[in-house]
Image (cartoon, rainbow, N blue to C red; front, side, top):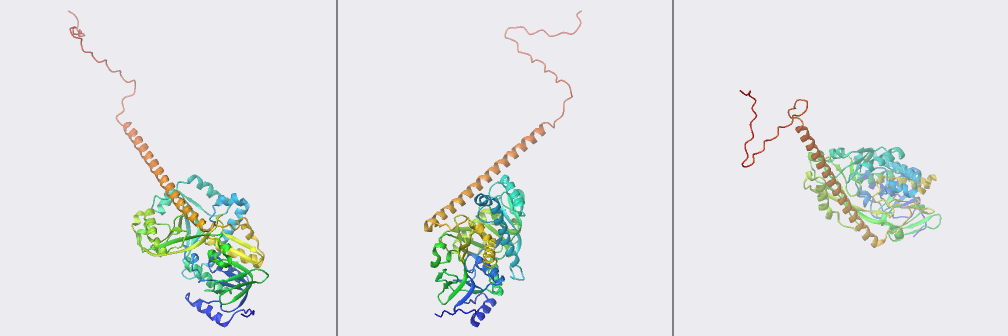
Length: 493
C-alpha cells in the first residue's frame, strides 16, 4: 500500500454528498488520508469533538465501524440537563468544593452546546421542549431544601422545589413525593440529534467514514498511524470515542467500562387520557435512576427502565415496560407497546466520564453511561479546544483515573447491584407510601375526634352559676323496721 496520503478524492466527495441526501448512503474510507485529528467513533462524543475541531479550523476524519449513531447515541431519550451520574455531594467530597463547582459549570456549558446546535434550522424536526422533573420515590423534603440551596446559591443553577401535592397534580400517581424541577433543562429527539450533529460536522469540514473499523493504532511519534481494512490514516491527534466498542487495538481501555444495556419503549397512542394523567410535558426521571419517561408524538409515552449487563433483543422487555407503566400509572391500564429500542453504554467504576489525554496526542472521551447528553457535548468542546487552543480544563477530570471494571465478574456484580438497587428502591418506596398512609389515617382520626368534641360542646348551655347538688337518694327500709316518719309541715291543733 502506498505511503502517499491524500487530502480528499472526488469519489469521497460524491459519497459524502449522497450521505447528506439520505442516511442510507454511507462512505467507507478506501484511500490513504492525512488529517490533523482522527476521531474513532461516530456517536455523540466523537461527533461533538469532530464538529468543534472542524469549526476551529482543523482537518478532521471520523472513523466509525458501523454507522452514525447505531448504538446508544441514537437510542436514548434525549434529555439534556446539568450534572453528572456521580451525586453532587459525593463529587464535592471527592475533589473539593471549588473543583466541583468548575466541573458543574462545564456540564452546563455542554448543555448549552446541545441547545445551540439543536435548532429547527439546523435539525428539522428536532422537537426541543423545556423542563426536566426529577422526582423522589421517598419523602425527602428535609434533604431537598439543602440541595436546592446549594444548586441555587453555590452552583448558579435555576431549580425549583416541588412539594408532593404539586408533583402529584402533574403526575397522577402516589409513587412520587417531592420533586426538583429544572426549568432550563430540555429534551430533543435523540435520534435526530445524533444524525443532525453528523450533518453539522460535515458542513464544518469534517469527513465521516462509516463501515470503517480500526484494525490497529500506532500512537508513537508525532504523526500517529491508524490502519483500517481498506486504507491507512495519519493524524497528529487521535481521539478514542468508541465506548466499549474500541475493539482489540484498545481492549485495555474498553475494559475500564462496565457495559450496561438500557431498553426503552414507545406506547401506542393513548389519547386525551394521557394528558390527564401525565400533565408534565418535559422529561421525568426518578431519583433512583430506574424510570425515565416523557410524552412524545402528542399522546404516546416513551419510557426507559430495564437494564442488563448482557446484550438482549429489546423486544424481550416490552412486557417489563408495560408492567412498569401500569405500576406507576394504574389509571392508564394495560398500554400497548408500539416500538422498542435500546443500546449499550459504558459505565465507569467511579461514576464520572473519562475525558483527557492518555499520552501526547492520544485522547479519550468515554464512560458516558448514565451521564446525560451534556457530558458528551462537554467532552467534545474540552478536547477540541485543548488540541487547538491550549485549553487545559480537561485536567479537572484527572482525579477520575481509568479503573478496570472487573471483566465478566464485574458484569455479574453490576447486574446484582442493579437488581439490589431496584429492590431497595421498591422497598423504600413501599415503606414511604405506608408511612404516608399511616400519617393520613392519624390525621383523619384526629379530625374525627376534634369534630366529635366540637359536637359535644355545641348542645344547650346551662345557666351560669354553681351546679345544684343532687338530693340524696332514699334508702330502702330494713326488714321489720318502721317506715320513716313523714315530714309534716302543717300546724298542730
